[in-house]
Length: 136
Image (cartoon, rainbow, N blue to C red; front, side, top):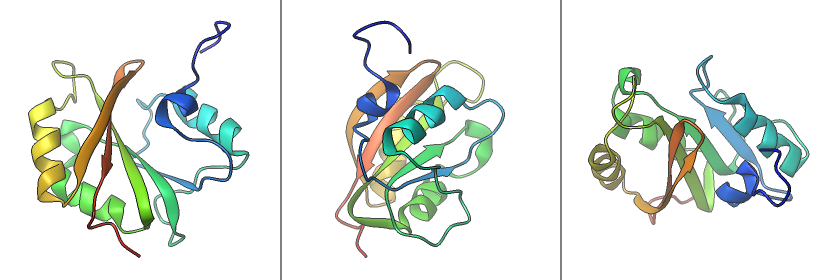
């Protein structure tokens, strides 16, 4: 992010310290600056989507062409610790691969999650999702 006093992506996402983060759905169009900033903040690499390790945060990159959002959210929640959160990152609405905000909130609800925050991360729209159904 670079500018003095600017908030880092990790700070925007509420990620710091000894948090374990899994990244799902990364592809060449994903903003590597976000991933790298999180790695710098937690001092370790992000777990890949094939891990069985429990994590505190899932960074889920999702595009409209990736399939069913509800299924992706349910799958993303599997490795979360109690109180964990999913940061769903989608291309902005009305851009290629973009997902409408109504679809995000409806899909979250169907997956047993609730949206607690939204924010913009460069060209990506972020939605923070948590829920009572996330238990380990």
